[in-house]
Length: 367
Image (tube, rainbow, N blue to C red; front, side, top):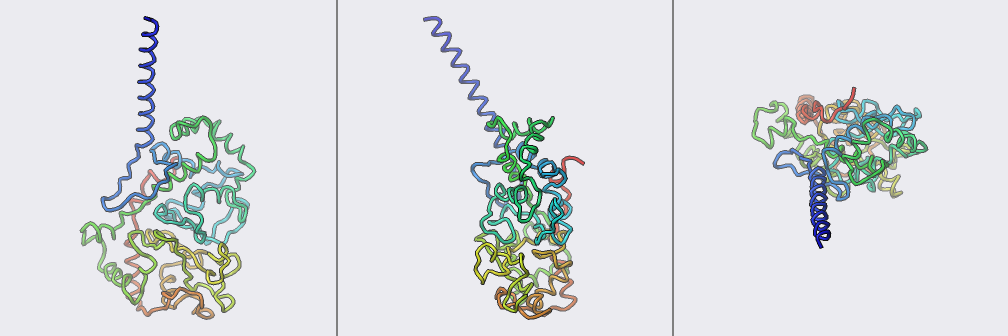
């Protein structure tokens, strides 16, 4: 009888300790604080990949680590540079084999709020899925991880620091696998949120001297019916891609006089095979747009002044050949003086968030 009582007492304390351990793990896994302004909602987070500080920090290290690639010298940050608002300074990306792509890498700023994550594929909606494309994709090859999976996993498992970091981020897992890599990268990329530009201070938080008089005049032009910029670059994140997936043909090309874009650059059409989708691409955010040149899906426009000229003409193809019959109805052209162009650019530059770019918690954890 006494032995039974003693065993019961021991079992009671074991259960208490186990529950305390589980509670501690739960606290650790839910310790993430967004630290966003009161009027900015956090982005969507998948139920199977909750945020935690350990996971975000692991994702940050993986994002900048070239050892995730096959040959070991290309990382996510190779094409998504922090100083460029996580975009690139090339016209188009170059893969690990030296192959030139047909796309300019999108800025990752506020991408967590977008309902589709790439230029023209409505099916890629989660960072965890998107990460598979640069790592394992073959058309084109980007990081070239395919075929080197064991090499990458062995590197992570044998590393002096990574195993403990993976255990802290995923305490329920015993071995390191790519699912954890994708989940950590996703958690980190969801933190790349920029909502502290001078324009935010001016428009939302009452600092009327936060932007220049020129930028204020540019704001009026941007939101005017005549220019219609805000028709697509809408809302707090300056993109209509935060709601239903939305893609537009801006009349950049008109190769065959029927609205086609160059081969391999036909946007949504390459997914849907619907003729009217030729040349349609997702609306990028304008936040930190000053930093993310060159512009457009193929990096074919070098400056904000050239971008404005493109839209003022009703699409660049209207200047070079003929207006595209497939261009969005809102791309109808407008007239703008040189002074007004200056005002509009001043407004766009007021969307540059220096605190976002300089935040060391977003930059490379090792030099």
